[in-house]
Structures are given as structure tokens and as C-alpha cells.
Length: 355
Image 1 (cartoon, helix red, strand yellow):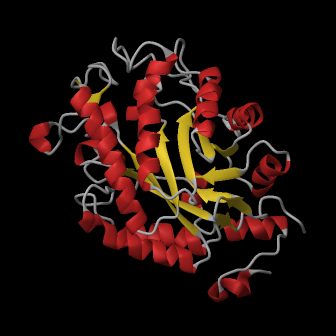
Image 2 (cartoon, one colour; image 1 turned 90 degrees about the vertical axis):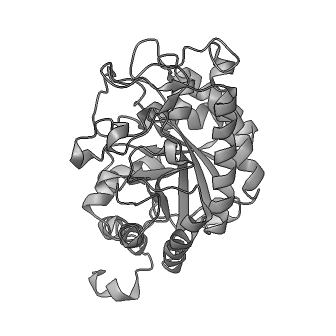
């Protein structure tokens, strides 16, 4: 049976064998930013499980940019080696390794979810967080430090340095994290950015950091490899970042040479109201794809093969990214191929499960 979900997708010099991508998902399992065997098994099993693109979790460009003390990082050369090993295994499974570079901003220095997720005090191993403005995500939290010009330039330089390390680690797809209420999204949203300088106020000013980070990443990332940007299409809150601004930003990103917009939503403010339901974010990906003429990725409560097939077949998005469903089912690609009766190449070790 012919399946659009299992059709290849070429972006620049890279061809994905199908339209199934594994979303970046924090594992809260690193020490000092270093990947370990948990990450090898977690990412590697999804590659052997049939996904075309495996995107490593939000990987911080600096120690202070980590969401939690257990986040992956790429701020020093010693962190490259293990990621390189993982990526070589992913490639051996005919999948493509990607990385999401990130800075958590005011959402940094948080405990892992199973330790409560609260801000970690400095006395307990936490650190000062930074943001566009000195306003905390939760009212009762420590106030972040508003970035000055020197701090902003450090963030940009950190993304540039991490990009070069990502290339050495043999990643083939780069994603910049400008969603979910992390640092770049904090600058984008008028609900978290109250600056009065050239980084705040107008749309052009609020998008400035994101564009400068894109420039910095492009300076170290080869022109022939895909560059993705993940955005939150809406803040789901009155007066916040919205789909109209997302379309406008996506047009500018396309002009700058970004290849695909990974379309999520929310995360900027704690009072957001998200109408959770299957496919609830897909219309945003569809709107950006149609209005901008750029490749898009759809994500969010997509759990079934037929659901994903319809998204691709109807032209609503070009890629479907899976997070929680891939945690439940590492072999999601193989399972969906079985469900859709799509003829794909299985790992030899698993072939007897095809029928």
C-alpha cells in the first residue's frame, strides 16, 4: 500500500526515509551536560524503531541555559564524543540525527519532573536565571536577571560555539529552540518581554534575538544541511504572541534560509489556556505552510498511524513529530508501517515481526 507518511522527504542534501520525526524530549539524565548510555539507548531505539529523523533533546548552549541540572549540553568539547557515538548508531539504522540547541532563560534551574519541577535554589545546586525582563514565570519564584547587551551577545556567541560542536558530533539536522517559553520565546512574547531597548516593544525588536541567533548558527552550520526553527505559534493567552506574528516571523525565517518551521504552541506564561485535543496544533502548521510556502512540522496529541497519514496526505504539514507516543512505543515507525501496510525496510533483527 502506498503511504504518504512513509514517503521520503528531501531537505537540502539530506533525505529522510519517511515523515516520522522524534521530537526533542528532555530525559533529565545527564551529568554536567554529558550524554551517557541512557541517551544512547533512548535515541538509538527510536532509530531502530523506524523513525526517519531523531532530534536530540533541548541541548543547552551554556550551563546557565539548562532547564535542569540534568540537561544535556554542548558548551565544551568534551561533550562531543558520546553524542558522536550515538549519532553514528542512528545513521547505522538509516535514520538522520538532529539536535535542538536551546537556552531556557527564566525557566532554567528547575528540578527534574520527578523531583517536583520547582526552581532549584542556588544553595542546592541551582543558579541565577536570565530573561529579557526581570519577571519570573511563577509569581512566587526568584526573579530572573534581565539580560544586558553583554549578556545577549554571550547568548549569541554560545549558540555559535555549540553549532560548531554539533557539526563535530556529526549531527545532520539543526533545530533552534524558540518555543515553549524558553529564552528566545521569552523575547518574542510581549507577555514576558517588557524591554524598552532595541530588543523589546515592536514586533521587529522582539524577533531580533531569534534572527541574530539564526545568523550565528548559520555562520557555523553548512549551507547544505537542514536548519529548523521550533516556535510556539500562540501563547494561548490574551495579548500574547499569536499565529499572525508566527506567520510573519516564518516569512522572515524563510527569507533567511531556514528550511522548516517546527510548529508547537504555548509555554510562555503560567496562565495559558490550552484546548488540548487530538491535532490541536496542526492548524497552525497548516496555516504557516500555506501562507509562507515553507516546510512545516506538526506536533501534539498525534497518536495513530491514520491520523499522521492524513496530516501528510492532505498537505497540512510535511513532517509529523512524535513525543509522548514515541515514549510509549519506541518502535513507532515500524508499528505505523504495519498499521498502514506500508512496505519499508525493517532492521534484520526485527524482520520476523513484519507480518
